[in-house]
Length: 141
Image 1 (cartoon, rainbow, N blue to C red):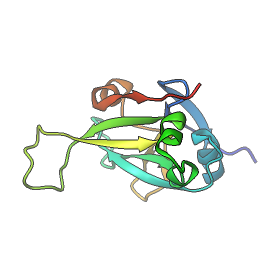
Image 2 (image 1 turned 120 degrees about the vertical axis):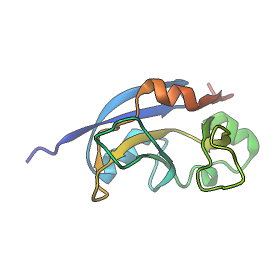
Image 3 (image 1 turned 60 degrees about the vertical axis):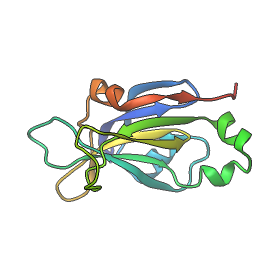
Image 4 (image 1 turned 180 degrees about the horizontal axis):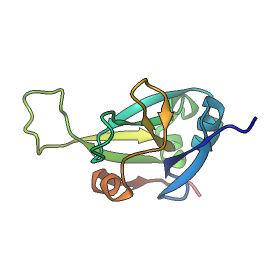
């Protein structure tokens, strides 16, 4: 039985690019899409989107063990990092237009979330993601 594909956005620190990919909707495919021998993922951020038909936010998955694979600061920059500006909605002392810069190590993928918590194709547009994106930082080759 062929498993359904979903569309995801990949933040690729090696290529220093953000692009759309298709993956099978299972955990192993998420590991493979993140790459760098990923064996454990976590939600790095929830990203709101402008799709009025979807109430849920998209989830950005990152390698939970990325820092464990980088014993030194140089190793972190060889692997690569990226930064996103995210709204601190749950922090009442910030104004809505203010953003907090978050730093992530390694690659990430962004998928949508259904009403019952399952993964589905992403809802955030590349344009919206680029508006939050603050840059890649990598010294590796």
